[in-house]
Image (tube, rainbow, N blue to C red; front, side, top):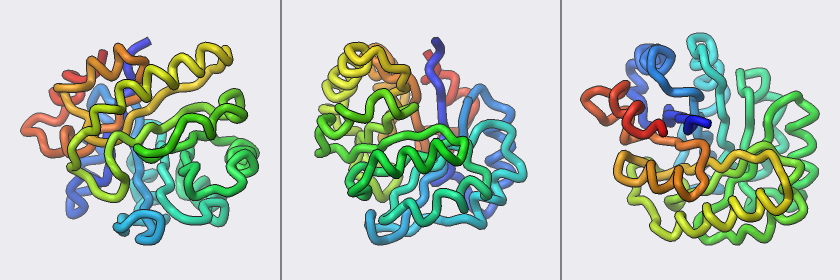
Length: 215
């Protein structure tokens, strides 16, 4: 299977958001990655439901909404209405993670669990057959443009082994610092979805940049 590329809209030009959304539509990218930050779970505020809905008006590819927020259950239905096709929540923000995953599934959406760099894979042991994807944070969440954390490779390999052992159908998504220098190694380790923000939208030719990380 070809690596799924999900450009992060957080790195787009917000003054020309429709232009950048259409650029992704016309590229070989597969999803839109939408980072929602509340200034509480992470030390930054990005954008919310109105911007998500505005992107949906022009997006021709699935919208992967990454909720970096506290108490995400409050907003699951609202983000579905705003256009989400899939939602990932942070294990660290969900004391009843299995219930939250069930709530996402009941809305008819794909469900993912996001893990901060320090978070162990152990929390997935009894969930691995209930989720559609795991988002491994390869930077500390909250800001774009950060440097990739090298220990991510081992974490991906361990997660791939866990998925295989459980005979689960789960995608491994990498979010943070992805570029042409690490994309191939991530894919070899078992990553199936690569989120790229600054690398794509900061490139002179974003479409060519996307093609360089699609294996």
